[in-house]
Image (cartoon, rainbow, N blue to C red; front, side):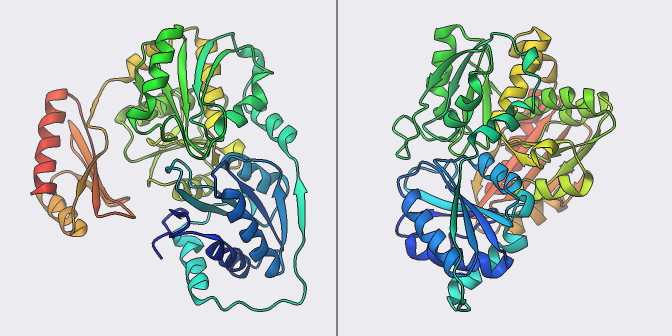
Length: 443
């Protein structure tokens, strides 16, 4: 079934994912994990309530109890619920940043440990397809829990509130769950906040809740400039990703934000491990090591990063797609915690965001470029042979490093696409090598 992806379940409602499938997923999740209880939450999508009800019925029909988180919920709040309520696993009903017609599920084990295609999603898919579940003698029950106060306290405990200054900030919640999350803590902070699209609305009337696409940042950039704000914050649909706009209305790349947060965390945790995905700039490793941290490159994808963080006991990880992971947040990602960290850093440093990232812009990046390719493995093999004189890594697709430039080409998990990221020490070199690599990929 095409809805079962590498990191979660996602599909168009109701043609690909519907109440019948949700019910089977509930039964399959309990069967696979052999859990006694499951924390269940939902976002603001128009189909989420109906999908959640069928999911819950499947879980209790398979004999497990449901801890239903009251009200609408973000993915980070769902992770918190799993950890705080000591649930045996959790399911979040969301399609993250996808358009409104989509819905889906994000799964975790106990302590918010993610379940990926490698660690259970494929098995859950097979159970759904077979649809032969063991009948149970005792059905589970549903208990509802309101955890807003505890969740807000947890988020605030991730920063030093006393250090926050009355900065002027514009926040675009994209009609997703991030506005609800950040409002839980705003009364405790001296910020001057301009709120954009804070009303949860699963039809996304203003723009897609995907800040990775530049067109979804246009409104925020205009508002930052119009308000003469210190900076802007863009949250994605389920509030696990965040992007930043500087005071000049320019997008700040997420690997530069990783540098700022890593520097701040390593001040308190010298010598600790910090992870970054292999699309990040060379500057990330340099900054981690300059601040007495141990830098470790990792695969792209939240499930892989969280697994490696736990193995290496990393204090922090940053991903180019705007995910930021914290050990003290049970190794999970949170847009709001990352946003508050950046607010604290700007408050403490007393500098504009553009000034803080200017010295980090040493290298020249292509950005992620997608190409339609049928024989993805064949093309990567061709690249490996042509550029074999460089340092070759197969950590995620293929990455080859040279003295003055590097590139990574990864296959999409869901589409016939190859994704290129390339960086060089000069803009001329970046453009030359980018065009050279694309000529091979598309040739």
